[in-house]
Length: 393
Image (cartoon, rainbow, N blue to C red; front, side, top):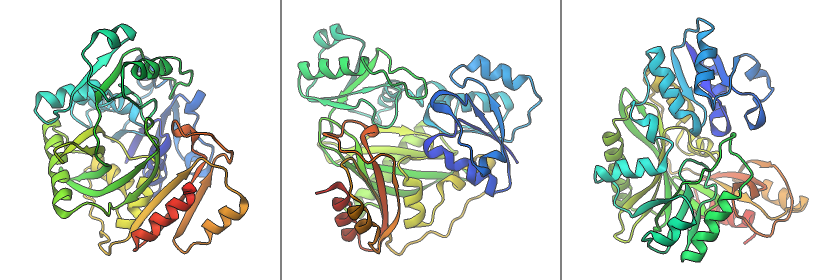
């Protein structure tokens, strides 16, 4: 089986390890520069690397056409390159996501408009391209402002009034950091603020049938920012009826989008009528180690499920149903060696990663997170206590 993985960055990196473990011939399409540099480790050295600027479709196609490559599967290792993976799959005559997702899978404004037309999304939304729009358009407050084609809750803010909306719009426009060399862009999405709790929904297709892997409880930083500071899966605070309502809602969306392949990561909040409302949906693996959490708690390997789905190989895991919970807690405050050791010594501890260990005044986006700890237990209340300790509260 020959697989081409486009920019396996972040959560998509596990696709490389999984494909190699499955004995597949792995090709990596990457710019391999800037913040798209591939890691230098033994597993990845077993793969064939094809270098091209993945932000330039013409260059990618020209590079691939220079060699007589034979691919059985083409997938994206990152949310930004799902459209490219669809286009290349169509070119090679391979199974892939529906063609209509090329333009809307990574454009939150277009996805909202598409779902609203199908009466599957009824929240208020609009777009702004400058301060003039902020002052002339009829905007409902409070509202959420976000880039229409970014990821990771990057520059997602709550604005309570026109002054705050103008401030957050201008702040985003001044951003110097480029996610995988992508600009935020002048046009930004504004949408209704949903007051309810937030969850993510992860699932996969096998033999064109959708299976819900887990509903994950999300923990966010204080408003007006929405930095994800933790995840706990499966969610512990939803009734059976609420879970079924969420699953039915996601199934309606997938059916409307004609999706029958791969994995999905959706984020939902409950609206004022206590009904689930879509925050966003993506056709890639979830980030923030949620893949690892679901494997710990449910024994479902989403990376393997995704590859099997594209290869049209049935994936039938032996799902763990013993009420095991797993969580990840991120921290931004400095941790002493004593604190780290105390957390590591907890019986629920699985792993940790410390990127930086500096004291920060606030948490405004994912780049402010110093690191994380992962725990698992059959007692979710114990995990909540561990998470609070990591957060320092």
